[in-house]
Amino acid sequence: MLVNNDIGQVLENRSIRHGSGNGARREVRLPPLPPGLEVYRPVDVLGSSVLVVEDEAAMLQQLRIDLHDLGYRPSVAANVPEARNVLEHERVAAVLLDLVLDEHEDSGFELLTWIRQHHPGLPVIVLSAAQVNSAAIRRAYELGASSYFVKGNVPMAHIYSDLAARLVERGTGRPGSYRFGRLEFDPTRRTVKLGEGEGRLTQQQTALILFLAQGSKPATARDLIEAGLFRNNAAHSTVHSALLTLRRRLDELEPGLGATFVHASARGYSLVAVHE
Image (cartoon, rainbow, N blue to C red; front, side):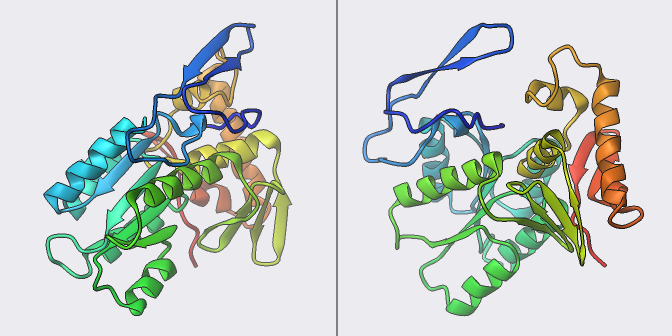
């Protein structure tokens, strides 16, 4: 979901009106916050798909219900194979990940590693048991965790507010860069950097990378059109041409970089971390 930067902070239960190219107005209404969940929840994140990976049934149910009540579209998985299946077949905007699944100490770390290899821009908020040690926290961040929370040590509202903030960051390109292996992408400066080489991107190319980074399932030409990156009546060939131009721009940094980073398949386009 791309963010409309003209939308500011709004009061709960207040209607938001969006303009469109043909002059029509679309009203988006924030649903009321559930009792006890006073969280940060801008209109931009409503409808975002969030994958919950948790093997404790009660916790999984709480997360699923809360996320649904907050306006998200939650998917659930109780183990690594289920999580990978969701990520391979659905577009997911963020992941809430329990580090220990099926009582296997490294299961969550293994899934986090896989996510960073295949979906480098996807926000992953890690949840862990109370007995976690500092080494585990450090390891999670080293593997690419976006945030880390110990269950029971912080209110659930804190976790949900952080989730919204991570989603907004991916949508607006707030200050800061994203790393995809050796490739560094700075959406605010609209630049990509590989080693000592740096290249500037157009506004549309920047938006394309941001959109691909925040989803997990490959995006089709139709997905990119519906996201507002192209005119509603744009031909699919126009989308493919724009992505080809983006790949050629990346090739100026290193031959073959474009096809490596912006991967194309029969299922659509996705980003792949660039390694040695």
